[in-house]
Amino acid sequence: NQSDQKFFNDCVEFLISNTKIDLPEKFLKKLIIANQKEKISEDEIDKDFSQSIKGIKYQLIESKLIEENDIDIESDAAMAIAQVSLGDLRKAITSLQVASSLGPRVTREMVYETTPTAPPEDLREFFISCKEYGFRDSRMKMKEIQDKYGLAGTDLVNQLHRELENISFIENEKKLEITEIMAEADFRMVEGGCENLQLDSMTARICILVSS
Image (cartoon, rainbow, N blue to C red):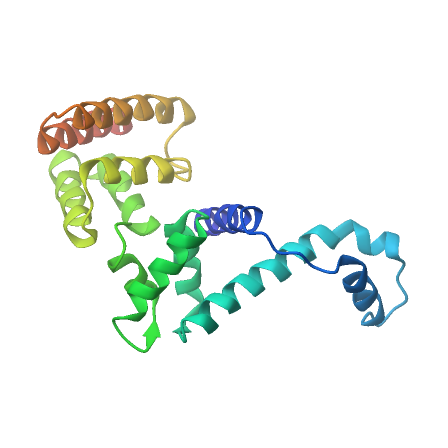
């Protein structure tokens, strides 16, 4: 999914930027040149070198996490960890350790089920339900997400807000209004308002907005 990949890339970018790794760049450039089938100059290498460095750093981080924790992990589980950690290396390590405690091989489902994070497709289904099926089904979907992934009301609102950017069938103008609705629900819950009432109110207002 394109939106999932974009979110994953953003998380990886943040993770790399916030993890100090010193690499011998001059040596790596020479190594890249030496391994090219066709002759290539250092100037040509420079064009894509920054991306190559990022790729190497991510592989080092991923390998280190797996090696230190003696973990067998599926590739889509690694993507899920990048998403739930939001670029925080300590959170990534904790997520990996908790998921690995459930079995010898870490899967994507394990990662989401052991962290207070709903996968993007479940969050998208909430918005689809708001547009296509109305309040009752949307409310049921919201409760299902909360129960399955152990989300507090404010956590759910924040995760829905992050996913909202990737919802292509909602116009940008309506996304602005939905953001205001979510911000109001979040504020009222933080101030002590009834969680169920605020989430129901938010869902009802989003249903009215996106179905019109």
